[in-house]
Length: 110
Image (spheres, helix red, strand yellow):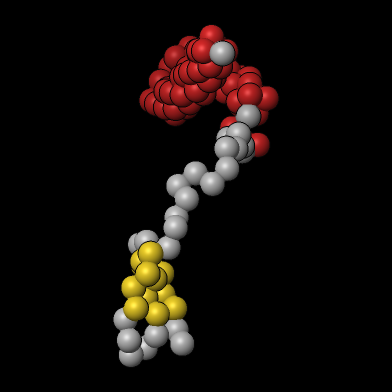
């Protein structure tokens, strides 16, 4: 006898199709959401600190490239690094601000 679960119905047997409903509990237990380690507050702050260091490094690269006439055409590399790191800083900062706002809103409800 073979079984196959399709949606919320149970189909039984190779020759006969007996249809019976299977109870599916949409939310079996009330659980707290587990945040992965790479999305924790500490990991976000560490990433933010490293990204600020990358921003400073890329600004220094732009200053050096603009100060030397031979390297003017190489300014695109630190500028690209600056744009990417600033966008990543914005993303991580937005995540931390949103998380803080959600925590405050959740504390106000109770």
